[in-house]
Image (cartoon, rainbow, N blue to C red; front, side):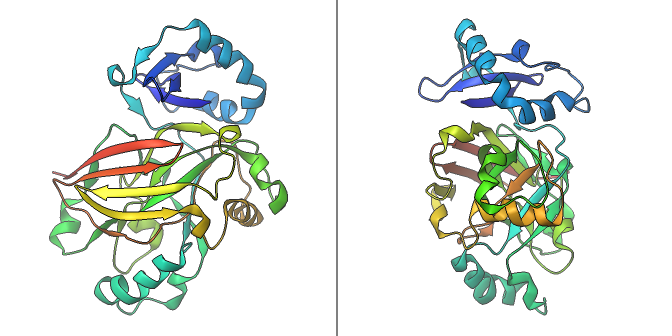
Length: 294
C-alpha cells in the first residue's frame, strides 16, 4: 500500500502504475484536521495501520481516482516526535568525506565525524515532494557548500526501546525517500542539517509489507543531467534492522518517528537554479527545484 498526504492534509492511496490517487481520509479516525499541529491522528495511523489496513483498502476501492498531477503532494509525515539520521553508513561515502570533502570544508574536524552513529534533525526541517529546497543566502555568501544526500528513510509504526535486531523490521510502518540537505563545514551536525526545507520527504510512504528487503533497493540522484549518486542499499555498513535496534537502545522510538539511514557516496554541492531528481526502486521519485532564500 502506498499512502500519500495531499492538498489540505488529506490521506490518499496511490496507484503508481496509473499515476492516480484515491482519497481515503474518512477511513482514518480524526484525519483531515487542517491544523498540522493537531497531528495526533497521523501518529495513531502509523501505530494502528495493521488494524486499519482493510478499512483503507475498502475506502480506496470506493473512491474515484484522481490524477496525481491534479493534487499537491505534501510530506507524508506530520510533526514527528523526532528525525533520527545516520552518519557514515556507506564505506565509499566515508572515503569521499575523508579524502575530498573534509580537506576542503571541514579542516580540523574530529575523526569521530566519520564513524557510524545517529544524530537528530529538527522536525521543522521537513518539506514535501512538491516543495522547493531553500538555501540560506547568508550561508552561500559566506562560501559554505550545501550538499545533497539521498537516503532510504523509514517511519516507525510500533514504537519501543531496546528492540532486538531480529524483531526490528516489525516496528517499521513503511519506507520513503529522504534527502538530508547539509551545510558543510565545522559546527554542530544537527544545526547544519536543520534549516527549513533541509529534509524533503516523499513522495509517499510505501508500507513495509510491500518492501520485501530494504537492503535490496536502488538509489539514484541526479542534479540536472548529472548522475551524482547511484548505489544499492546492500552496500550499507549498518543495515536497517541494526539501525532501528541501535537507535532504540539510546532513545525510545515512538510511532511516526522518522529514521534516515545514511548518505551513499557521490554527495556534492547544490546551487540556486539546480533541479534535484531522486528515485528509490519501488518507492517512487521526487523532483525538487533549488533556490536561495530572500
